[in-house]
Length: 131
Image (cartoon, rainbow, N blue to C red; front, side, top):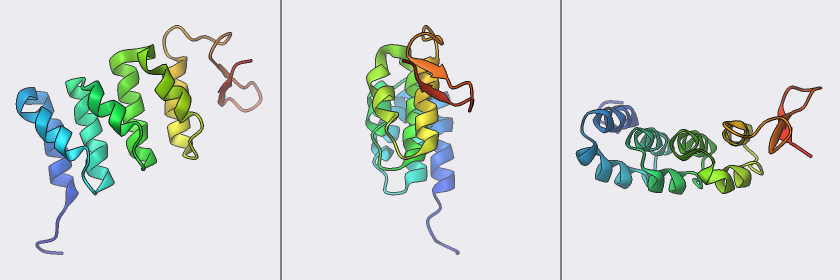
């Protein structure tokens, strides 16, 4: 529809700006982390990963939309690793399977092996809490 708002350009511009001018991007990404369109919040999380802005990522890890939480959790994992294990552990209770998978991957990354933290269920191949 001509003249209607499209989130695509804005969202992609946030991430691109984060890559080329972090000082200009940071306040814009922080502002758009609360945007009413969830796709914009998801791209704000992607921009926050580029900026390594854990404040935004922690905020978006509690978003109402699973896709936003998934990106924020993956971003926290790549940015601060196991420092945010409490966030990943809480996300394991999510009804959104992709959020649970992102949390399990975050917990499994690094020093968590099959004997501690997260283990792979032999029958299903899915991640499960280790005994």
